[in-house]
Image (cartoon, rainbow, N blue to C red; front, side, top):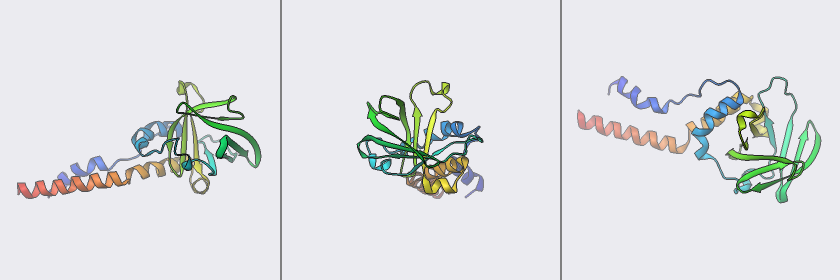
Length: 182
């Protein structure tokens, strides 16, 4: 089979991470492509009782901020070992957390799996300094910078089973078509 034909067939599957200007720009570009792989907020086992570390791309941000969402709406935030307690809850499909459930912030779920918990501030998020709150499990945080973490998340989509099945089916179709035309 002609290499040019194979290149044309493979091109849609050679998805590259787009050029970005920071964490929020990267998420704006990646999240629409991977959203279908996200869990739902009702599946609390994906975010409860996990050590979530806050991920930011700011050069002057050096704190390690640990977030833990526990059963019963308990929320604990530890900034460099200093603890603050608060609350979290669901509110009509939204996620609220802060020092109390009435003194917090409202978020929409942007993405959730066993390694990433990404919330998008509710409202006109372009007006906010931090439109996303990005949490990553502690073991990944220790290994990855923000850009590596986004690439890792994107690679999970790129290498998903659905993608591989689609690629295999397309390849089989191309081979059958090539055999029929020869």
